[in-house]
Each structure stands twice: as structure tokens, then as C-alpha cells.
Image (tube, rainbow, N blue to C red; front, side, top):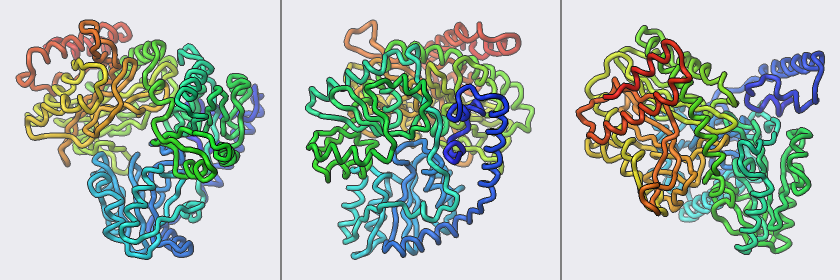
Length: 638
């Protein structure tokens, strides 16, 4: 029950009962529901001290452990962006809820590190009397170690929560000032965390071939053949999305993302050793996995890694998600460890034809839900009194009835006025705003469907926008169009295209401090690698079948935020052999009332009109009455 309670709430409130009994009677269901309610009520009575007291308790623990400081990451054992409740250690000691960040707690001071998405949010959530704020990229942890620590001190870190590359950077920074980096056997935060949630338990279920497009056995054999060809005896699968993709399974262990947490070892003969809590596996999943997948408890993982080492095997690990602990278990036992890209990463990212077609269908249904919402918003918001959470809840209500809908793909970013300038803003009941008249409202949202994952941002003018708002919106739109219409040779990386989306903003001395595009999974993570479109260098070439976001933006602190996001898929360019282009998947109106038409070129106007004509053609047949009439007006040619 502790594990069930630690898992995110399922769209089906009683889904967890499937793990207890098949075809339970109504009486048993009632008994189990009552038991869970009573259990949860007891947990609610656990008293958690305020953050300053937690920080003091952590420092006392560090003293007992002989440490002068401790590095705290945001990730879990899989280096994930979406983590279970038990892994929210950074939130526990600081109050910061963003999806990326670190902290260093010393005995007399502390610092928290966030990237450009969270520079405003961190100041609102984290007490400046407890932590100083630093930029994760330009003022990194390594620099802070050098600035604040002294020779002979010891700095601890949890090797299960950082990659070998991260650990090496910390070690080098510590060594330069005579500090010892200490890998702890257990995490001191867990020691002081009264009522820490258990590891989640949710059902790992088969993902049907009609959505996956390729049998798990075919995937295993294809990758095993590549391992053998490359001289690897096995690969450790540490990324949850890779595990789920490889075995054609999905779970619900983390919020908004259908991950089943666990580890796997793929051998060069296509066998898989799967390390997962057996309580997650109903009989139909065991039957789906078959005889070539051996299931063991998570506690057996360390021994399996050591066995590979003792056999002097050559083992591939994922440099992005395999922890320092995994590397050390293998290397110290004698394995030759080759860190690189996950063997599943590229095949997973380059979707097959079934997955791409599924994404098109999912976006068609999702676009209808978003259009109904925008029609409602156009009517409701100008009346006043509409709060951010009520607005995003309304959008969720339009998605829920959709065929194959399973969850939102992330917590919606519903941001009114100046909150829109907080790039990854999260509305809270005590801090949310009403959507004011004559302002911009930003809504970034998405859905998890069995046949695809969606992610869309629309910025809406409520009332009459200012001239500055319209100019900035139009420059963001120009960048969006430039990327959407790009044609590029095979072998081009996303970093080579990033400037196309920024150029119209740069022309006005403006920019945005986030990437332009991230990969998206197929009923998996809304943020998927290895491809991306960003200023940051990336050596992964864009390939047909990859799905990626197109989301330039602009954020004026304290006033407004703008982002226009569609998902696109890479495809062969019919006009020019050897060239690639994007097909836009997302279908929903872009607010014409926020556009300064004089800034658009003839070709840009033609693209916008053609896009809206396509939205009208595909979405209008799914709407009725006032919603349909609104869509026709919202997609009129300009």
C-alpha cells in the first residue's frame, strides 16, 4: 500500500486494485478502497518540519558522517526529469519544484542552481536567507566548490543520482582546491526525511502492437545484432523510456509519463534480464514478456552487474542516464565499460510509420480539444474573474473524453500576465492570478494518448494587447514559421537550425533562454532525446520519423510571456532528394488578434493562411455549433 500511495494518481481511481486481485468482487473493491483511505489518513498525520529545520537536520547528519558539504540533484536513480515522490530530495530541502536544478549544502551556507527557465521561479519558492541563487550553466556547481571549500574538507554526493561524467567534473573541481569527493553508501537526506514516500508501485502493462508498430522481440533481436557487430556483450538499459520502448510496456510510476521504473540488461543473444518489483507485473504482462525476458527483483541488479564484470565482459552503458554507481559496479568487478548513447535512443527517436501515423491521429483529436478550449476561453476570459488553475482544469476536461486518452503529458503551464514570463511557471492555489483584461495569457499543455504524446503552447490576447505585445508575438511567430518551413540536408543537427527561430528576435535585440525544440516520445516522455534544437551543440542528426517541438518564445520579466509551440516530424523532402523537411503535426489556431501583420512577409502570411486552412479542414468536422463558428473565424485568412 505504501508503494501504491507513492505512485501518481491514475485516471482510473481503482487501477491499483488490478495488482491485488484479478476480477475482484464489489465487496472486495469496497474493502480495499476503505483500507487505502485509512492508510492514507494515517500518513497525513505525519508532521514534517519546516524547511529551515530540515536544513539544520541535514547539516547535523553531515557532521555525523564526517562531511563538510553535500551535493543534491533533482534527478532520481535514472537521471529522470519526471521523478517519483521518493526522489524529490531537492524539493524537500529547498522548496524548489522545477524539473531541473541542484543544490550544494555546506555546514554554514548553501546555494541552489537553476537554468534560465527557472530564474524567476526559484526566487519565489526558495528562501534567500537559506540559499544563494546561481545559474546552473554560467555559475555551475564546480565553480561554487572552488569558491567556497577549503583544503582537507570532504564533500559528499550520492553516486546513484549522478552520471560518471557529472561525478568526474565534481571530483576535478574538488581536487583543484584539495577537497575530497566522497561517494556515500546511502543518502543523508533519506535519513532525516520523516515519512519519506516509498518507491512507487503501479502496473506495468503491455503496449499493444497496433500502437507500437514493431514487436518487442524484433527490437531485441535488431539491437542484439548491433551489439554483437560492435563487439559488446551486453548493454545496460537505465533509461525508463528505453526500457518501456524495448519491451513494449508502459507503467505509471512517475507523474504524467507512462514509465515503469526498473533496469534491464540486454545481452548480445537478445535475452533480457529485467530488474523490477514483481508486484508491478500482472499475469498478462508476464505472458507478454515471454521466456526470453527473465524477471528479477531490483536488489539482484548489483549482483548481475558484478557477474558481468567478473566475466570480463564488454558492456555498453548510457552516458546520459547510467549512474556513477552502475559504472563502478561494472568496472570494479572487471568489466570493460563503454559509455555512450543508449542503444535504444535512436531507434526509439526515429518513429516507425505506425507511430508517426498514430501521432497524427492523436494530434487530430487533441487539436479538437484545444480548439474547444480556445473557443471557451475567448468567451469567458474577457468577463474577468477567471483564475489560472480553473482555466487549465477546463482544458483538461476537454481532453479527458478523447479516445485513447490516458493522462496529461505534463502539468499544464497556465500563466496570466506577468506569470507568463516565468518560463516553466506552475500555478499554485495560494499564488495564482486572475487572467486580466488587455493582457497575454500563455497555456502550455499536452496529452498522453495510447497512440501518441502531444505538447502545444498557445499565447492568447485577452482584450486588446499593447503594440509591444503584438510586435514581440509576431517576431516569435516569424521564428516559428522560419523553422517550420526549413529544408536541410541529411546529416543536419538541430543546433544548426536553432538560429532560424531566433533571428527575428535577434533583429530587435531580443532572445529567449531556453531551447527551441525537444524530442517527444510515442506515448512516452514529452521530453525525449537524443535530438534537440538548441544553441547547445548537438551531434545527433535529425532523421525521418523524429518528432520534435518548434517553440520559440519571448519573456519580459514582470509583464508578459509569449511562446508558440507545435510538434513537427522530420520527413523526406519530395522536391529535393537528399533533403529533409518538417511536417507540422499540431493543429490548433494561432491567435490572429496578437499579430502585427505589417511585420510579416508575403511568404509568412501565406504559411499562416495555409496552416489555418489545414486546421479548419481537419478540426472543423469534429466541432459543432458555436465552437465550429469560432474556429472558422479564428482561422480566417489574413
